[in-house]
Amino acid sequence: MLNSQRPIPVDGYQIELIDDEILIFHPAKQTIFYSNHTGALVWQLCNGQRTVSEIGQLLRATYPESASQIEVDLPNVIQAFIQHGALRWV
Image (cartoon, rainbow, N blue to C red; front, side, top):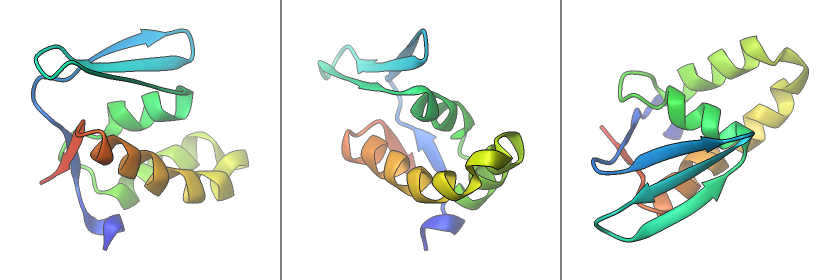
């Protein structure tokens, strides 16, 4: 189940924060993509120690007014990072 998995960045990816967006790139793979503010927060919380559920709890505690949207967006954001090869499961 996704909620109990622990995402971690793949080695070699670098991030650049630009206003409320995040630029994620891998120089050797010539891979680059953008994400919004939510994606930047999720990326910073994915450390291989926290589960997806724990990341969700932190985000909902910080942004209680957006709790229902976080529930929907979090799995999608993590899956997008995984599809781009920027996150993996530990």
